[in-house]
Length: 104
Image (cartoon, rainbow, N blue to C red; front, side):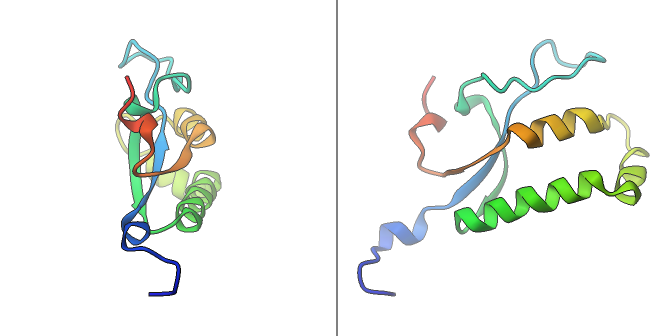
């Protein structure tokens, strides 16, 4: 452990959070609710640090831009690529102990 680092700083994880869908769910029109409280957002992954979280966001963006990947995904039921792109555009990397995760 480097001097100046505490045990607490080693256990803080970073989360990739994506907004939920604007209600009503299960409609043809799907839009992310980027104004929903962070406590309602979906945890899309946990990472050791902010850099790793941002790298995952970049990786997901590249996947959503890859025609081969998109062709494979389109074979899946309930796949909405525009919705996925919008959610990723509004996604945020935040610390796991961020108070917005428990706020109502």
